[in-house]
Image (cartoon, rainbow, N blue to C red; front, side, top):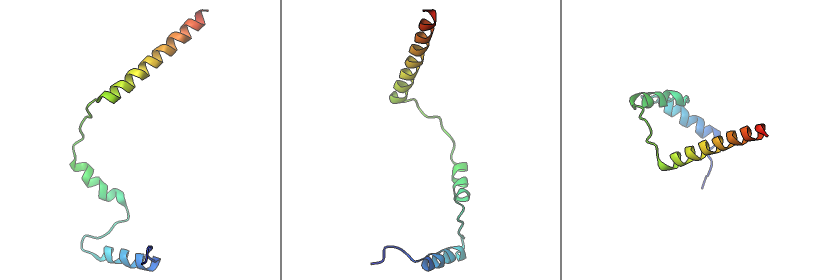
Length: 74
C-alpha cells in the first residue's frame, strides 16, 4: 500500500489536469472569485453570545474609565 505519491506521478497528474477541456489552474483565487461574485452578502443576525460579549466589553471599558478618573481625583 503506497501512502505518498511520487513527484513524478504528481507531475503526470497535473499535466493530465491541464490537458483537460476545463483546464487546471494552481491559482486558487481565480476559482474562488466567481463563486463569491454570485453570492449576495447578507448581514449577520446578532446572536445572544455576541450580545453578551459586547456587553461585558463595554462594562469593562466603563469600569476602567471610572477607575482612572477616580484615581486621578485622589
